[in-house]
Structures are given as C-alpha cells and as structure tokens.
Amino acid sequence: MIAPEAAATTPAPPHGSADAERFLVRAISALHANGAETERAERRTGQLARALGLDARAVLGWSWSTFLFKSDAGDYAVRGNDAIPDELALHRVLAVDRIINDLDSGRVDLTDASDRLRGATNMPPTHVGLFTVACVAGGCGLGIIFGVHQATALAFIGVCCALGAVVRRGLGKQGANVYAQAFVAALLAGLCGATLSALGVDSALGLAALCPCLILVPGPHLLKGVLDMATLRIPLGASRLVFASIIMVAVTAGLLTGLWLGQVHLDAAPTGRDVPIWVDVPTAGVLAVAYGVFYGVALRFFYWPFLVGAAAHALRWMVVEHAHANPWVGAGLACLVVGLVLVPVCERWQLPFSALGFASVVSLIPGVLIFRALAGFVQLPSAPANSSQQLLVVTVDCASSAVLIMSVMALGFLVADSIWSHSRVFKAVSRSRSDDDSLRT
Image (cartoon, rainbow, N blue to C red; front, side, top):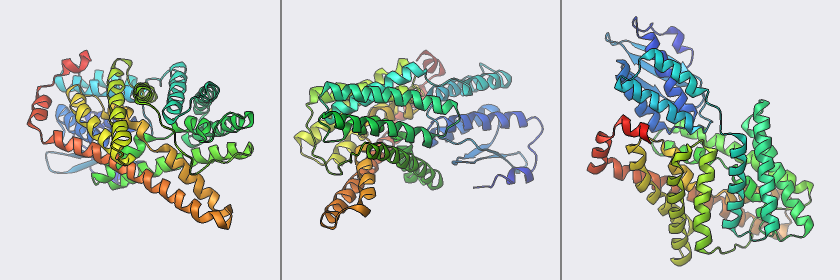
C-alpha cells in the first residue's frame, strides 16, 4: 500500500479531471466507511470511473485507502483518504449508490452529484427511540432463543438493553469511542446480571448478563474480516478482525467488572436449554429486523431479513436438533442458504449484502462462546489446581468452537457467492437490472 506522503510527490492529474477524481475518492470512501463490503466498493469504483471518464483503481485499507488514476499519457496520479470503515450506516451506503447510478445514467451532472453526496454522508443515524426499541427487542429475543423463560429476567434484560442504548448514544455524542461505549454498556449488563442473582431469579446460564452484551458483538466486522482474509485482502481483513476483537475484549471487561462488583461469576460451562422451533424461528426473524435497525437498513427492506433470518434459524434448528449435527454445521448451512437467496436479490436491486445478509445471520455469531472463552481465560490464573485443567479444556473448547463457527459461516457466504458468480442466470439478471428498478425499491 502506498504511504500517505506519496500523494504529495505524484504528478498532478490532467487538467479538468481533478474535480472528478476528488468526487470518486469521496464517494467510494463514503461507501467504504459506512459498511459496504469491500468487493462492492471496488466494483462501484469501476462503475464510477467509467461514468466520469477516468481510469481508476482503489486499494482499500483500514486507516488509509489509496486511489490510483491513470492518465492518457500512462502516468499515475495518487490520491488518498483516511476514512476508517468502522461505521454500519447502510442508509448512507444506499444513498451514495443512488448518486452513482444517477451519475452513470446521466440523470445528474458532477456538480449536482457532489451536492447530493454531501447530504448523503451527513445523514443522521437511526433515531435514538427506534434504536432503543431495537436493542430491547434484540436482547429479549436472544434471551428467548437461549432459553430465558422468566418474565422478571426478560424485563431486566429489556431495561438493561434500553439503558445501554441510551448511554451508548449519549457517550457517542460526547466523543467517546466505540470501545468506551461497549465497555459501559457491558458494565450495565454485568450489574443487571448480578442484581438478578441477588434477587434469587434463576440465572444459572448468566443469560441476563450475556444477552445485553450479545447485541454489542460486532458481527458484520467479524464476518467481513474473515471474508476479506479469504479473498486475499489480508491487511484490511486483519484490521477488521483486530478492531472487532478489541470491541469483544472491551465488552468482556465491562461484563466481568459488573459481575465482580456484584460478587457473581460467569460459568464457563453451563448446561443448555432446548427451545421449541415454533418459538425459535419467529423470534429469529424479529432478531434479524432488530439487527437491521442497528445497521441503518431502510424500513421498506425489513421483510427480507425477517423471512430469510427465520428460515435460516429453522434450517439450523432442524440440522442441530433433529439431525444431531454439530452447531458449526448448522451455522454453515444456514449461511449458505442465506447467500443463495440474498446474493441475487442484492445484485438485482443493487442493495448492500451487509444490509440483508449479515442482518439475517448475525444472531448466529457465537457471541456466548466468545464471552465464555474470554471469561475462562480471565479465571484461569486464579483457578484452584484441582479444577484448572477442566477449566482450561472448557475454555479452549469454547474458543475453538467459536473460531470454527465463524469460519464456516464465512465459507457459506463465499460458496454461495461463487455459485452465483458462475451462473448464467445470475449474469443475465445482472445485465438486465435497471436504475429505475433500484429507485422503485
């Protein structure tokens, strides 16, 4: 990757193309920064370059992205942008996509497109009220899926999720970074779990504390990191995974601190609870909608994650409960089916796969296993000698299972994308799509 200083030493772009180059850098950086998958941003770079009469290529990174512009003389001009892809604001991604489509079709000129781009990048986040409701629905839904059946526990989870949502938005307005927001929200979750334990409410699984933390799991960053690594975008993929890992560490630290203040410990190896399919499937659909709100998905698209997310959970439930397969098999097959259904949908209507695909399966992210593994590693140094070996085995089992599930989930998406990429039907759909269809959706 070219260093930022290189932009100052490269030849100036040809006369008349500087505005077009600046617009391309701003537009693609906006896509990259707000949650568009890397492959999508690179394809949009080619589309926008053709629309502007440029020969351009983007090398997307975490803290610095480089854009190469080739002139008719064969010289290269280099521009850079420091946009960090840590946001999940997919309503901004859709707005930028429409601008690129309109510019490509000739509906707007570069001046109008630049004005619209400024408005798209300044779109506000999801309203705090809707965001809070989604957090409550997500936390309580996860509690139901994992076996919480007591109304008191669900009420506490809902209150904790609501407080966490409001606190996170408040800290964000004060300039706190995502790590501080995650830590404070997880601290509240730990205190909630400790309170329930003190009240004598059954919380052997620790779900009253875990469920508010599970909605903090950076599922899209984990999945996109694995996908980038698998497609040889190793620096960007590794950066995404490191970013997501630090968030997970911050969440775990907050959770364990809250439990410690209440003199409660998180069991690294609890027994599970079976949930009937008629409860699991519709709850999973609601969860997918809640995650769609987190990611800024437009309300008119919510029926896709609801239906596909519910179907994915139904498939996983059948594979794990009836076929007695390992959880990683169920998660991988669910992601494969989600990819086979939604990749052509997203391609046909030019929607970010992050908006629909990740929202449909992010509840399958093994957040419970990750938290329990981290908690186990924290407990190991102070564990008694007679139980430390068993704790180590359980902790490593949780960690390895989480890594395996994440890997097969990404593999499911990759296989689905590869199948459609080599399908003649998919290519025909891609050629036949129109900008009018995109606008009507």
